[in-house]
Length: 157
Image (cartoon, rainbow, N blue to C red):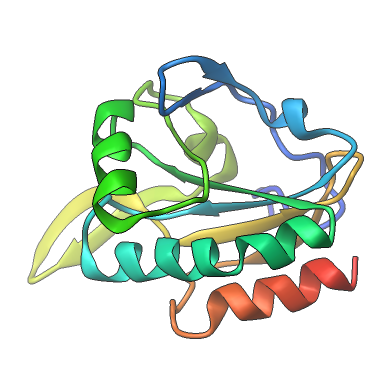
């Protein structure tokens, strides 16, 4: 666990794809605080709730100079459909390549459900400072109340 990027480390700057398919890098946000929340899959109950919660607080994050970005391995077209279906306002990004951002962060990991093992995204949130350094990490996130907790931490940064 100690080799995972953590508070004080630079956030890896691995290329992602925006919903429209254009390239997006976390360094594009340099000079602003950034919350990057990783979630397993679009349109599943917990992931939908998490995205709705962050969207509902987006104005407050923006007022505090903090950008939001949700990331999963779902393709951009699926993100677009998910965003439209639930009226989400937080920008979403994706990547499908091996050795992507979740691999660099160590959050694409072996999971198990109902006795079956598979690779999946560990729900994790990063608060990144204006210089691109990780200020705080929430691992194995429980969705209820999470967006509000992250907002408080961002305000204090």
